[in-house]
Amino acid sequence: MSYVSVQHLQKNYSGTTVFSDINCEIQKGEFVTLLGPSGCGKSTLLRCIAGLTSVDGGRILLEGQDLVPLSPQKRGIGMVFQSYALFPNMTVEQNIAFGLRMQKVNADDSQRRVAEVLNLVELNDFAVRFPHQLSGGQCQRVALARSLVTRPRLLLLDEPLSALDARIRKHLREQIRQIQRELGLTTIFVTHDQEEALTMSDRIFLMNQGKIVQSGDAETLYTAPVDVFAAGFIGNYNLLDAESASKLLQRPIDHRIAIRPEAIELSLNGQLDAQVRSHSLLGNVIRYRVEARGVELVVDVLNRSAADLHPDGQRLALSIDPTALCKVA
Amino acid sequence: MSRAELGPVGVYHRVVVYLLFAILLLPLFGTLIYSISSSWSATILPSGFTFKWYLQLWSDPRFLGAFGQSLLVCVGSLILSVVLILPLLFVVHYHFPKLDALMNILILLPFAVPPVVSTVGLLQLYGSGPFAMVGTPWILIGCYFTIALPFMYRAITNNLQAINLRDLMDAAQLLGAGTWQAAFLVVLPNLRKGLMVALLLSFSFLFGEFVFANILVGTRYETLQVYLNNMRNSSGHFTSALVISYFFFVLVMTWAANILNKDKSE
Image 1 (cartoon, chains in turn blue, red):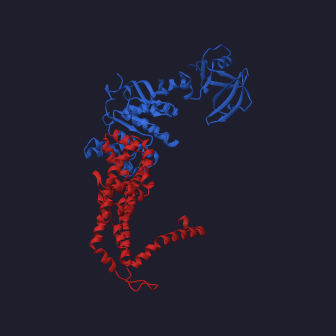
Image 2 (cartoon, rainbow over the protein chains, first blue to last red):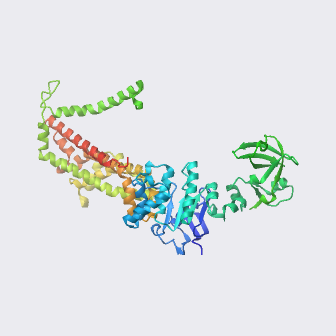
Image 3 (tube, helix red, strand yellow):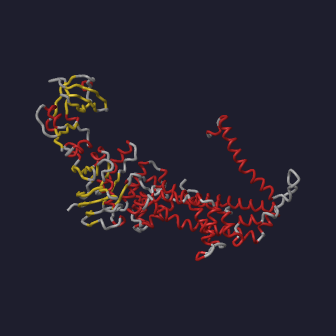
């Protein structure tokens, strides 16, 4: 029996269906990510689990208990919002203690537990500040501490890093993951950022138009996309229809294929039937647009030495690792 | 050094500001001088200064009565509007955000209908029948509620939009707070600024209101402005003292509210 089990979940908004049959299982201590473009229903699913949005059918089991009839207060779920949602009228300390105050935890215990989580998020020196005196990253750490202090059974993170700048986002990403591992906390993370999903998650549920399109670990999702959407959303796949694929591979192919740009090799030896159209330097990687046998491809080459830099117009030989060809629906 | 202190542009800005202050304060200053002069008619400067007008005013039981009654009507209608409008705003913004558009039209009505027109309507409606209230303070409280409505609604709406009501409510509820607890502990304290602005605006407006008070109630429940109107034939020094007292009271109120409203976190 899994720790969290979503069964046949259904949600409509004034006549339109957000999702009609969502099923997923999450194990205890797992960090799973709901990944998908905006409007795919991932945030709504999260809000349904939290109890902030009603559901129109199906069940959400947490440790075998159906959450659907319970109010959000009684679910034992912690949540962190993109907007931080810190209470502006309270200090950091009071914000964090709010949940304990609602549970009528006595003052000594409350003080000790607040200090504990402040320590965990490394904000001990900020206890008496108000939210408007903190930076975005600090606010989000306070929000995290506030949701951890009540020792929730399940932690929900709704795009918590989207409002932060890149450097802080990276740091906080690692910090969240480390705290989650330390506490063994089952966590559902919502994001539209594939890099965030790939680096943080034990498992990813890729969503599109109210459906879970594919689920699996980062490796599986990245190397074996099941359909055009998955291939298009994750990585920078070259998507070829049957006709182009046949032309490129010079054998009859009757389905669409996806090729990762880094699975294609360029060299100056062999049959020079490809030509560089343009290139851009991304730093450690050079991204080429190459035309080969009438098909345009994106090729990523590791920037190891000057020999990897080919000028536009250069004729090259192209080889594709056959195991990297994915058949997609 | 602030930007305004630099160069001729700064000087120009200062002149504009001081000129504006002068235009606004000059009549008030004149009234003040007149109210403390023993007589000031055929001379450039008053012939002498005295506080007797103020003494006379503040020992007149009719003035004190009108003052108290004005205060009562204003405070009554403000309490009524807080009690009704706060929950209304909360419900509109939390549960039915689409109603906000309708409310924005509704709150314009008290301004769209000229006071003289609406008094005629009110007189007809409440002059007789089961709701005969004309001549009692109750009709003024009800009527002033409608005048306070736009001030209250706008100011608090702006405040609500600035605090991300939905996320705050959601966060509080997930932390175990009931709807009422969340509203009182989390939302209300953050509306304090908007609420104070709304109350001060409405209070200063209502305290000086004359048309409704005079037509709907008149001398049967004399308010400050009606009293001032009835005293128009007495000494100008006396009515000047009244006006200055009135301004001074509103000033002290505003100042006190500002002090109380200082955010301890700033």
